[in-house]
Image (cartoon, rainbow, N blue to C red):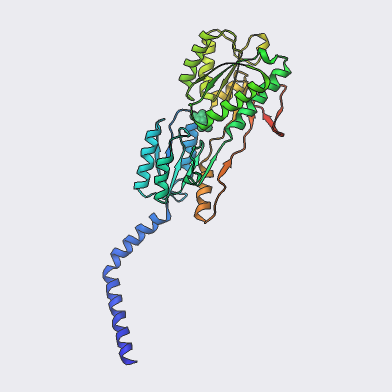
Amino acid sequence: MKTRAVIAAVLLLLVTLSVSCRSSVVEESITENSTEEELITVGFSQLGAESDWRSTNTESMLSALSKENGYNLIYKNGQQKQSNQITAIRMFIQQEVDYIVLAPATETGWDTVLNEAKEAGIPVILVDRRVDTTDKTLYSCWVGSDFELEGQKMATWIHDYTTMIGVAPEDIHIVNIQGSIGSTAQIGRSKGLSEAVKEYGWDLLDEVSGDFTETKGREVMADLLQKYDNINIVYCENDNEAIGAIDALEAAGKVVGPDINNGEIMVVSFDGINIKALEYAKIGKISCIAECNPLHGPRVQALIEAIEAGETPDKFNYVSETLFSSVSGITSIEVEGKTYTITPVE
Ligand code: GYE
């Protein structure tokens, strides 16, 4: 007993000595570690900065995944190039981030790099657009809009409105200024329109990409006006394109508005975040805008928190959205049995 007590006392002394010798170092690294460890490191690869929607989305992500909220965010702007996004993801993997958040430019071409993230054990959360991978386990979950539904809603609004003012389907001559080709937003919105074209027998004159930008929207619209003299509806896959297209239409002496029976050219678009576009919607220069909500920061934050708490969030998380219009007569539309009320622009 006595020997054991002596050994215990000596051991205690040794431990105390070694702790006190290292104490300052240990304390320092504990302080450092504890703050760092409390923060969740997230690598966010944004696809670019092509539109107002995109800048609002970036701001929302940066403010939700902030230090104050417990995040150490590494933000990378892909400048519209998938190759830049792939490089960013590889960098995040090397930095051993806790999560990768990806807003992908296009749907295809992600299998290899997402496999690398999976092998490194880093969960990937997709935001806004989606990826087209055969293996759905390459990402944890996705949050964004139902782009095809947005297109269907817009097509239904066009159908209801033109029926109301008595325009025959064959007298509807549409051009589609598409978004960036291969992006989920473009694919869904173009599909919503083409299905309606088939169903109602509208005349879809042309589909060209305006890359979701004002400059390209203006350029493409000017070309389309050279090619066709009977355009009466311009379907723009985002507001920035619509603003550019309206410029080009007015520069060519056209009157933009919903009165297509009297020669006006009707413009419709998507997003509803750009101030100028909302102003245009108020005065009828843009006849209808299908809302696309960019405020995904808190949604991504909630998904990360759920995973941190050991939960498995739903794979696909949709945001509900409205339509904005100041054109009188249509107060709601119905798509697949569901009613959507039109929000007037104030
Ligand atoms: O509509 C457009 C942006 O993917 C939903 O991308 C997004 C689209 C948005 O540049 O303005």
